[in-house]
Length: 299
Image (cartoon, rainbow, N blue to C red; front, side, top):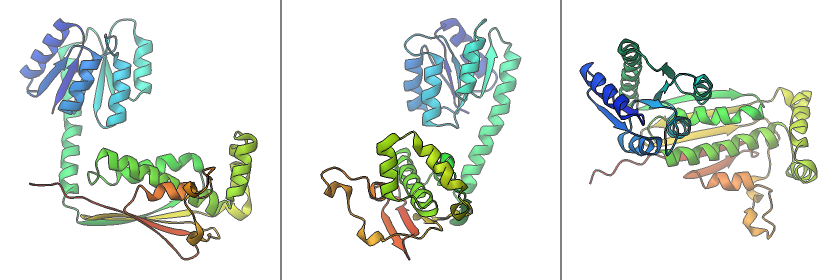
């Protein structure tokens, strides 16, 4: 297990590094402020971080935000001083995994590290097993809850595992979000581009109210979006189907052709840039997108 210790008190850093190595955690590095700690995080890619909150250059809360944004699986344990309960609560809200109040005993620390060491070992075993999967396929049924589309796209991208790098995952997430939103909004809820444009022009705040009205309408309420996912060692494929009336996808034009940058079809247009292929079927209520998995260059 790779551990990074971040604290501006040199004596604390020295004590922790020495203690960890005595207890059998040999792969340990340290930093003396948040800014330095973040740089070492990117270079070192630790499994677990022990960090103080009050530090120069960058405090522990800002450091935590950056780390969890980069990799939510990185385990972060906050080391808090006396009277810093408020900061501990903020850290937990930012998804810190645990905390220790100074002064803490070596036994407390080691117990925590042993617990997380097992979790990290399980992750490695999972990744090793995942690499043996030649192909997989699954389906998701999704109701017309626009507020949960972000959660759904996050799930779909997580299921890609290590097939994509961070930049590719970000692009896929944006593309899937646009297509699923389109399936719910224009497909199942039957909201026309003209209707949406008019509401946004009049008062964007009424959009939420308008969505709720449509979602409660019996004609639209029971409709669902179905997402079929196929993955193998060479390609990722998502097929998104809604239960709407469809549209003439052959006549979708680039919004760049209009001097006003027309919003009509903009989501579809933008989504197309995020995948290797995008194809519509039937009456336009089925769209299939693919992303090739690039093999690492061994030369």
